Amino acid sequence: MAYWHAVPYQLRAFLGRALLNIQHTLWYYLIVVAVFFSAWLLLRRWPGRRARLQRTTVGHRQIGREMLTSIGSIVILANLIPLLFLFGLGRYTQFYRDIDEYGWAYLVASIGLMIVIQDTYFYWTHRLMHHRRLFRWFHRTHHRSTNPNPWTTYSIGPLEAVVDSLAGVLILMLIPTTGLALFIFTWINTAYAVYTHLGYELLPAGTGNHWLGRWINTSVAHNDHHARAHYNYGWYFLFWDRLMGTVDPQYSQRFRQRINVT
Figure 1 (cartoon, helix red, strand yellow):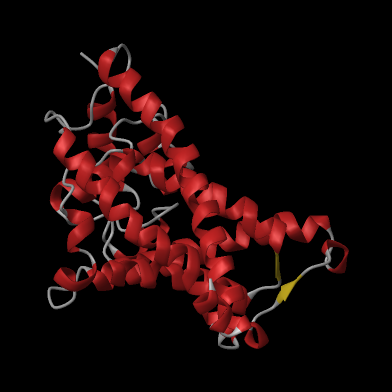
Figure 2: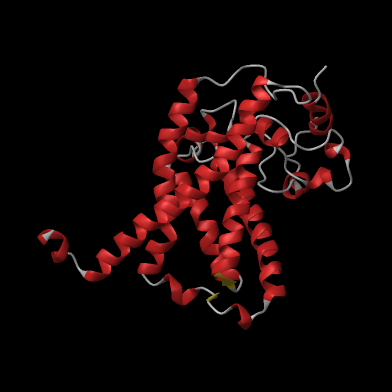
């Protein structure tokens, strides 16, 4: 304890917040993953209406590896932004505390803006990490799971965790953002990421051809990305994929075929 009191107060305060951030992020992730993993187990045991997106099963060794890898990424995801704030990032952001400053309507709209920024940032950084000179350093850990499940979501290497965390920095710098909006966005972000790694599709069979559904990233789309490490780079949407010609040409057909049990 004597050594602890010798540590500068600012550093002690940051370390305390870091542990709290890890705890919060871990709880977000575990709650969301627990819900989706329960659904995954039920669908696996009683497939009924939904087929597994890949014929092969996910082994216990893969799940164990993913859970261990996720620990390191959660530490980074939880603490990179607070660490940057410690070094003065706050002065460059548009963070505000009083919701009445912009109103509730803007708070709701800001969450939508965060989703758009997140999707755009992720698409372009994701494509960049697939470059042959960067893949092994940034994205290889995540793609070790060619058949994803809910535990695959945060199974990423430390450099990719840093890149992914910077999406939050970009959001804080681009738009006025308050704590409640960030809290809601974090839950949405985590839930959607876990859904796309589910290994089963929850949306209706016509989604891939629907005028609106064709723009939405799905579990089918991201599962194909893991299986072939090509096409379908988006997070929430397929807008950038369709605009840039990186959506799977057979996506609509694959979607209908792969979610129906015959």
